[in-house]
Image (tube, rainbow, N blue to C red; front, side):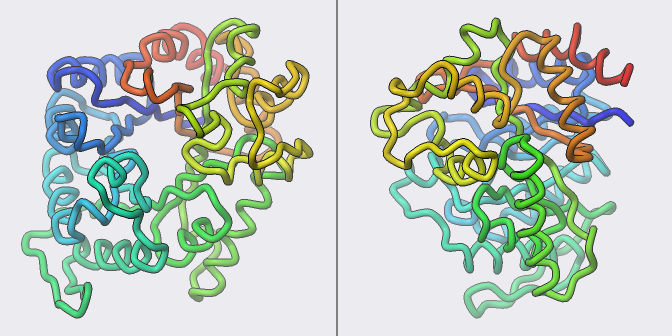
Length: 330
């Protein structure tokens, strides 16, 4: 069975250029594209996704990720619904508390309870049912079919449990080590059981950090800063260190990345994602499939705050030429 692979595409270039790039991702064989929702970029994720929906025919399309702080639940539902009319069966909505988008808007991240309430409300609205948010009853006309699914992006144990309680699916950032993946799935199951839901009701996408380049360069990523005061390994969440500890790699919360030894950095890279030449990345992903049964992953190209809006052209080329064909061969 071939692993389905999606990839993060930032809104770092004018919208027509980003849409051309998304179309090239479809040509390269990707299953889906997630575009981040960063208002401060001056480019809107949903305008970009709508244009991409018209340009593509099979690619799954979604924000990666949006938040309930800068967008009202009714707006989120209506936008996903309209996208579904353009690309039936190809639209997801992914939600998280927010990071750079809410930070740049001068707002705090959404509370976990708030996020859960919004996810449930948006699912109700997309299904054509009324929902209550902040004491107000919301309704949305003209629900499209098939209904867009709502995923939660989760990196910490409590967020994984929330996904199990309220969402159609979870994008989880926990690395590739089998012990970490199983521990994360245990939290999703705990949420399912608490909500009285059926095991397997929540779809799973594993977020996989990537650095598709020679080993020497790729393995330097754990030894870098994302931005001053925030290490690469604590971006977007310090929960990354929790999953590395479950994988047997104990790194202090207040570590200085440049002090990590090359040997430890190599261990981190193997446990955390795909770091190395295209051939290595393909084999590492096939190993993850054998070890964990993963069926769907989201490539999250490694970047710093300064390079976060660069289009991942080298990742797309590597997937088109090497990784995708190797996955297809099994």
